[in-house]
Amino acid sequence: MRYEGMVYRPPSEAYSLIVQVTIGCSHNKCTFCSMYKEKQFRVRKVEEVLADLQWARTAYRRVDKIFLADGDALVLTNAKLMVILDEIKKLFPECLRVGVYARAGDILRKTPEELAELRDAGLKIFYVGCESGSDRVLQDVKKGETAAELIEAVRRTEAAGIAASVTFISGLAGPAGWREHAVETGKMISAMEPSYASLLTLMAEPPAPICRDIQEGRFQLLTPEQVLDETALLIENINVSKKCVFRSNHASNYLSLRGDLPCDKEKMLAQIAYAKTNLAALKPEEFRAL
Image: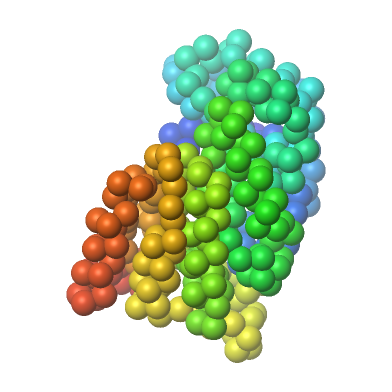
């Protein structure tokens, strides 16, 4: 398998076959992100992708899941994606699903018919980095997408029968904006009603541009106690009518939370309340990681 540079994938794709369809990220401007900074974005030739898939078939006895990297494979036209997905179906009939990172703009450029075509070809999950439900925060971190666009993109994904796994970042608004960030993010999840929602906690690592903001005093990280308050307020503002699997158990989180909304909402709030009075239950700083 030919990989270019560092390869990233969602935690739930840990045992997936990873195949690079694009190199890097077409946006690559988010201030909090240290991924893909060393890469110049480009789309790989379909022939190269097919050759990697054919090699993988000879190397692996069984492949249950495939993740199409890098940052936004969904930027490809359906014509190109379908060639790749058809080859996957032919070579790996045992494959249960294919997943991709997806930006809102990429999703919104697809018609409902195109999304259905991708679903039927095996593309079963989109991982959407939403980061915040606040337009102010999204603009500050140079996300390049609005809250309305993110909501509509996830709703279209779910309507097409494709699972949306959305991620948000605790602490992204700093001490001055955490309440707005929490409330608007809770409202966004409520409006989206995604299949999965997860919460990471901000960690600044070079070459993420936010590192300089922290060093020069323009941005301040939240304390663990503030992160707990923000998380509680976020969960309080989530009101979904269908099951949403909620996770805050990433390596970056101080407190691990797992539950299904809406049924486990009070249980998770109780966990946070307990942790606020027992800070020893929080993950030590030296054990946090991205």
